[in-house]
Length: 139
Image: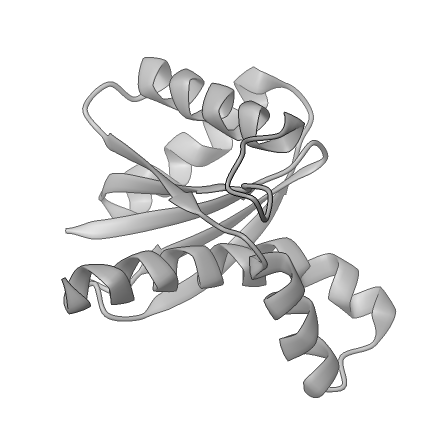
């Protein structure tokens, strides 16, 4: 069983997948959003290639645990994915501060601003997926 983690934004979708044992998240790509059909085609290619059966979508909550505009868009995207891929389980995962953690990791690795912009969403997807997998191991 392999899992996919998504960091969904308006312009990009960061994508990560688990190893076959479900222990380690690996960044795959950042999808530049063009249209819903093109987004789904790219996700379908990855789902088929990696044999994905569960997708973890980052749910950006506010610090007071409420759902804002970005969170509502992530929930809506999850519903769309359910329609496109009915056999795949969709999990919304609290992703508060994952982009900040990814940014901090890249800064500590001395990655240039230009290069950070290219990979930040993929790194955030890794944090989302790894956080989910670690929580499952500990429960």
